[in-house]
Length: 255
Image (cartoon, rainbow, N blue to C red; front, top):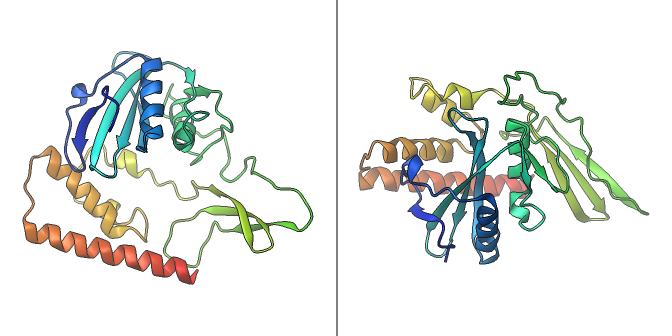
């Protein structure tokens, strides 16, 4: 069960922005950590600017696998806030992305560095201050420990990414991924949509997730417009998504 502060919804259901509860940060932090500790998942943690203010609104999405419920909860933050990551590892990448996008520093984050190496969206900055792939990577030391570097160019349909494996013999002890090699500004392009190119953007976000990304976007539009999808269309989507999932598993097995 999700903590009581969260407003409940379901996948592919729209929620009014102002219906999401806004609580003090400490209460927000405690609720998220408790929700994850109670076998909830943290599929999203993101920030957005508050109109007419320099503050940011931080929103967490918690998911319960058994019930299928999604919980939403928000709080307001400034230029910095106490990091959730030391007590909730699932927030690790999300907080790094928030810091990169909005220059909001999660104080106490164990290893704060860029995720996508994209320009920040705050304070009028338009250029990234870091170069893609130039960062501190985790390293292991010891006899017979070796590093295997893969990418960013891959012999497949996945998007570019640089992977560094820390290995001892046949055992992989650590994998670190560096993204951002093909930032195309799709999110900004979506702001004025939908347009004739919108579905094309969705289908080409990642070569191995064409069906899933397109379906997710369609569900967003359908939920916002309160459109009912015929059962036949839902069945076709399910079959196509399952075929795509199987193709990805088979591709990974052969990699």
